[in-house]
Image (cartoon, rainbow, N blue to C red; front, top):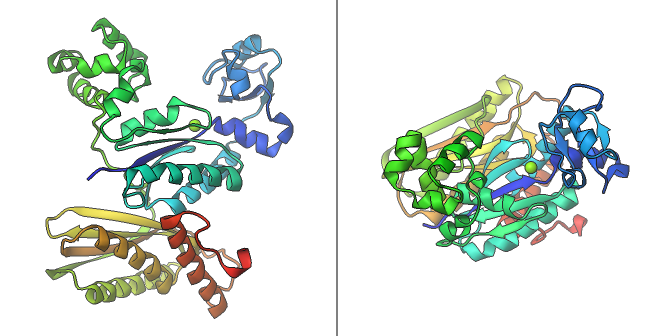
Length: 384
Ligand SMILES: [Mg+2]
């Protein structure tokens, strides 16, 4: 099956967040990192400052010499973490599986959402639009059948880029780029590759397996594969330390939907009780299935609000189940559900009122439909 992987990367993230806090900084050469009189280094620079040769990790003094008109602002890490949280939530609402790489970039596995690869351009465009409308930030997106190519693609046309690499065109897309553009090729590896006569990713791809292995060992084998546009690694959901889960292995493998639902509901009730007794709420629900051939898949879904209610978890998990059942005809050996991104009950709303519950259910149904058919496919009467 051809996968559809997005790599989403915010442009000049720290600077953009500072510009949101102080719009007078927009369009100017801005350098985040502190006062140039200090011994610090550049944490981030706007594209206007970069055009003067300023880049991150450069001493602030040197940055000022290169760009005397630059405006220096201190690093506000709390602001970036907060903006990053909202960015990741937005991604969670659009993708079944997300893997954050850092505060401002993530891989999304959109295979289930875009079964036709060519549809993915529209999805990427609506994702970029939502990042702009809801966060006031600009994202570059790379779309490809594997992670490594998607990552190179998101960097290819920055800022505000959208680059699609169609299945079969991965190696051709990479071939002409400098070897240093391949993730994992830093200055040291780059030097070794130059000694082997390798300047471009294409030359790395064409290197004899022996030569790459001799100088770089197994890492060389991997880089060569990546250079050929081959990367079978999965998009791995973020590793959460704090989560609670339940699993059930069936006596006999099954496709009986009512049995699957009954099992799922009972596990969600257990989880709700577990959360209650710890006075916790969860923001993410993950469904796990193991098929009769022992292949295991997980899908996660973000709740609109933190919850400790079995019904809310069941709604989210059964939607994920429906998705997986329609994607794979095998019988199910094991089903599991996990709730994560846990936190204390600081929510002010009366979560138990039927009104809140109804609203929550409605909002979740809308989120599911919009995720499948694009934002705006359905809205409540009120939001039109
Ligand atoms: Mg970035």
